[in-house]
Length: 416
Image 1 (cartoon, rainbow, N blue to C red):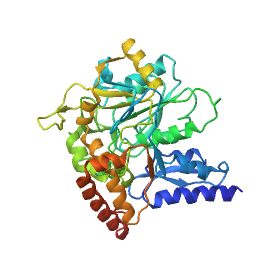
Image 2 (tube, helix red, strand yellow):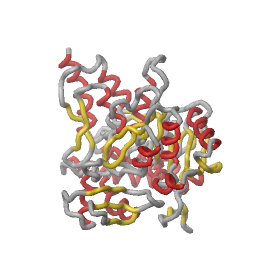
Image 3 (cartoon, rainbow, N blue to C red):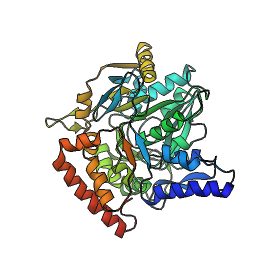
Image 4 (cartoon, helix red, strand yellow):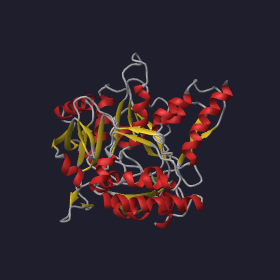
């Protein structure tokens, strides 16, 4: 029975990994203590089997099929939420930033998630949050951490454009805690929690952020080397953004010297080009399943495109659920956050990648399927309606996706 149960789950997991539909969220490891996340040869987080015992619970493969973002993602419909066509369900939206100037400066944009995590742990509302930060021993790597104080929240501030699976961290979904994760992690966590017993205790508070995809770890390593730090040379710290808005990609040597490049250069010319295939067919880069989602609220140029000039950080903060709305209301009242009401269409206007990716996603999915690659099942995202609104671009995207998948099938590793 032990072997049969594990083998059924292994087959289900392998179908997702082998078809490049794995997002690296790590939720499958919560179903089987014999699975763990490790970096693959091409630099992405993937589940691997480390042991056969103890066995996963019977039916783990069916649960996996329900929660894995590489199999299925459902757009939620929380009570009291209005559904925006490209931003998803919103109870309330805010242009906001951390009142604490140190947190605002340290965060990726306005420091809003960092401020919330610090406040909720220090006032005892949440016992802890699971988040991510640079590994102490090797800052090129990103690891999950448990946050219980303002100091720990500040140490974890800023985006990490590299593989990490925080939902798989011990205690990440324990009652009375919180999780800060990528949209795919939060989607899997929400699906798993929705199937939990009613008496399971206070569910974790789920925080997320707008996500453009997970780059390969190799991209970080290569960029550091290109900036002049030899491969393997010890680093004191490495951050991708923050410490200003949007901040610079910066590697700090043990002697305190630094090398750096702009956010636009690091993401646009290096990291962003290596995002994994599953991220390119993601219906939810905006964290729809969270309680609260944060995003950059960029300034724009005359064409309406984001401008990455340095300035004081400003976030868009979306309450997705009544619980998230209530937390934000109290954070504003307590002086933790400063802000004003947000026009959702204005946010969509400064997030062109999120809008265009969702608007043409049906074409990308169709092209992949025509080329022979299975794709996840997505429900509730209005993809057909969005595709029809721009059918020419959808058709172009379908052709491009078809060619990309065909190349990937003939060139191992090309599809990521």
